[in-house]
Length: 497
Image 1 (cartoon, rainbow, N blue to C red):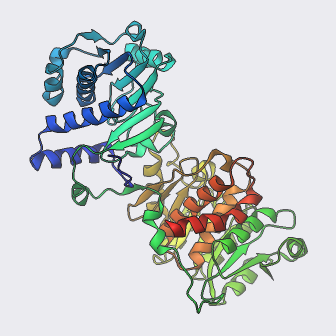
Image 2 (cartoon, rainbow, N blue to C red; image 1 turned 120 degrees about the horizontal axis):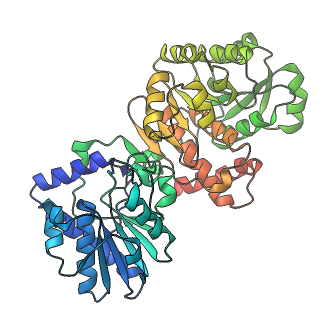
């Protein structure tokens, strides 16, 4: 049975789920048999019986492989079993599973893969603690170069289940079958690109174990934010739906802010105003109709606009310019008391002086603030947290704790993180979102949802999901200007869920 739940378990948390289940009276070998049965049943849906090579490792993942091999043979499939290691050294449930296998156990060498139409990767699971090197790396290279369909058990061998990083060498799977809940490494790159189609199967672990585990990471989906998305009532008016202020760049750089402002309006804000230097106002007036325009040549004038108590959120960053003037405007916005989105140049302007920004945000802990960096901006603002070998979730969580803001660390695997330990990984973004200006639209979506009173973490999650859904619905050929017009369809889809 496929499980569509959104909680993601790290390898340590999954070990805890297994332990709690065993302590509740389910023998570990029963869990292994259930896992092997679910995998064997899935494999049988892929084709008629064909030559299969099951490649087993020295731990419980290998034990799953022994069960799969036995069940496929019982179903009439020709199976060759390869073992990386010595069968006599297998322990616990893996040893029991190996004992029940009646066939030949061959050494895991590349030449043994000849003739296989399907390869089962049961070498290592999600909790791999070291890099794969030497003959095992050669074995993985041979598996990847094979024309056979590759089915990984739990996690493609070599992919870290917590971070999605590659530990030396990794399987490129066509399918990955995992148990009870997915892992962060199934959705974080580059692991996501190595897993192929992901299948989550039930092996008899009760959902109640999650109450004890309390996982902090989940898949970003409407389940986590749909109830917080505002739905205007019959008596709603533009100010009751929230008033957002977007800060424009100079006369030569208004396009990015226009994209953000239009997106904020499409996201449901009742009124969106563009604050701009006097020289930019004529250009903005040529392009904008539903967006109000106000002059703000500097931080002082911007503060005056934000003195309007009806202003509920303000965004700054897209093409606003890097430098002292932007720093002053950001500090002015943070002093105003409204919800805030900081993107792009508003983040880079604090390079080398991030403490000032973080101290200002943290001075008002009830403030709803969202920072939306891509990896380059993240590296400039969060020195020491940009090691790509670390988990993207952990980096974003530490950044959220340091800054006091909700972090949207953008990319194909965007991560949303809060200082309270919650994180979410987004997985609905299609590749055609990789186009200039799409990040400006995302900042505007965050702004529009914050303006309507959504909490920052939920607003950020909803904005990222709507961003991906709008792009998915539009399809190939997308450019950033297409996104605001596609947002209503994404919202309608959200309301139908």
